[in-house]
Image (cartoon, rainbow, N blue to C red; front, side):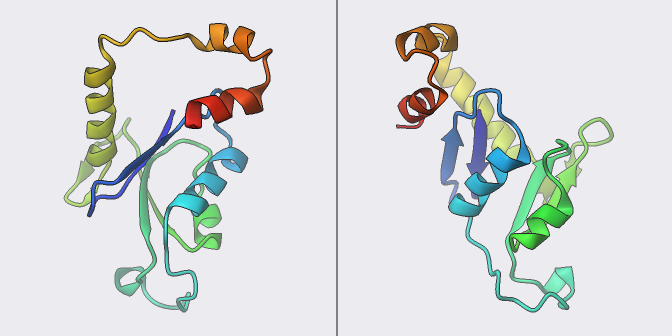
Length: 132
């Protein structure tokens, strides 16, 4: 699962990405679902920039230059070193995951393996079914 949440509005979007956690899969999802000011002058200091800041863990698919190319400012939290400070944290999305786990605790659904069998292992159909 891949989740996005806006700190200001608390609007959340969750996507089933199965085992494809590559930047080729994730970056288009971010670009399609997160608004930023791509036209801003790149010479502005990051402190004064109106570009959207994206806070993430240190997963290897998230690279600063990839986000910069898309008009975002990427801030990475390395959880093996620290969990954040002030506004520099991942608590919002971590809370989202804890709420989903709590809500789904008693849910008994269909496993990905069984879904694969039902839809003849067609990843596009599986993705459509889970996202729809």
